[in-house]
Image: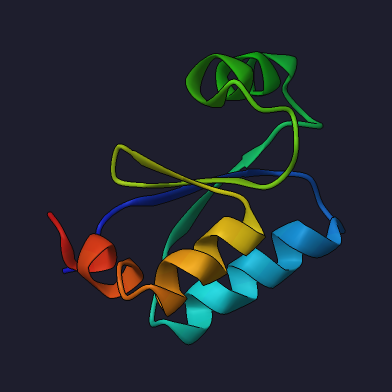
Length: 87
């Protein structure tokens, strides 16, 4: 079972697209996309949860991973697979 993945994003944003593709390459088939452009509440929620305004902002379970670069760094450090397998 794969942990729940939530990504705050906007359509067509390069970092968001790259993060989604990267997660899919790791076998993640279900990503909850929180479209902050369509719902101002989601942008406010993102700021409150992350204290960041850049996109994307990725959560695996309740763990805030950060953006695309943070996601790749976590994988290179060997932490992404374990996080994705957590319940």
